[in-house]
Length: 150
Image 1 (cartoon, rainbow, N blue to C red):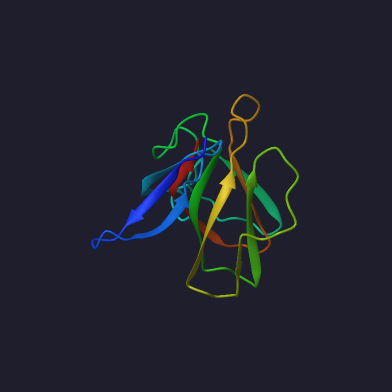
Image 2 (image 1 turned 90 degrees about the horizontal axis):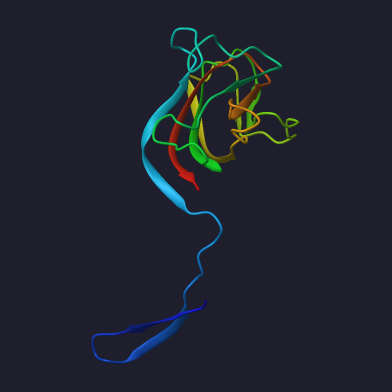
């Protein structure tokens, strides 16, 4: 269904008729930023240890920080902290082959560098660990969620 919105100036002149965009299959829901993962924290599902070089690690997202079970994707802020060497991090849904693109690139010794991303989530019925991260170089990582798509 297409609707038209009319913008009227205070003098009563019609400025333009703009079509409204129909709702898509997924709607974005913003969240108060919330920390999903910090590898500087004690070892655990949402904590340490530090990400090792050339290794993938998966972790839960759905059901945490206001992200409901059944969410299709999340809007996140990814931060690398104190990387040991030049490298990158790649976020992707758990259970699939790692894509060849990076989410965040960094240089050795940077105190912290961040990037925003939208990451699809794994299907909860087949994989309870939603998101995987691959580290090309050993680094600590912080992942904050800012919203989700459902």
